[in-house]
Amino acid sequence: MLVTSGQRRTSDFSYTHTAVMSMCGGWSPVKPVTLEVIKICLEMRKLIEDRVVNGNDSKVYIPSVYSSQVVNGKNYVVKVFLGGSDDGVCVHAKIHQALPCNGGKLTLSGFMFPKTFDEHLEPF
Image (cartoon, rainbow, N blue to C red; front, side, top):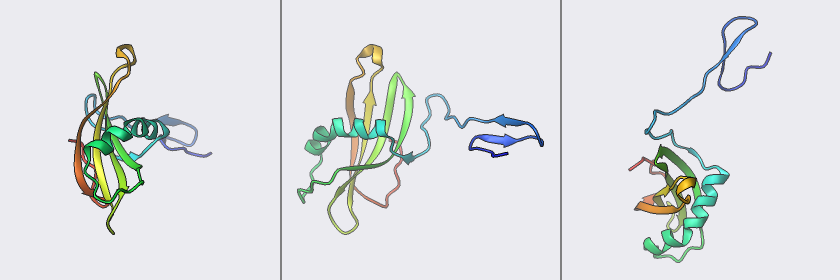
């Protein structure tokens, strides 16, 4: 029998499912971006690029990893690769998405720039 991620074998014939959940209000582990996060980053692209001084006029904008937090809506901290020097220049952007009942509006609530591609993403 195949054991899938999130399942633990308890005997020869039974399995229990264990879900990995972050603490309520806590940040999720950093993981690769999803289609949903890519869409959010693309919607926020102009605002992020306007706020970040990027000296090389690069047309590169690639979200790579993120962490999220459920609050009154959802907070995302996303590493976005902007190109640039040999090491690559990134921005760590904090984006808040309001609840759907409040319009679901996206807000850039902060950013850290410049960051290198190798710097770990940490919620701020």
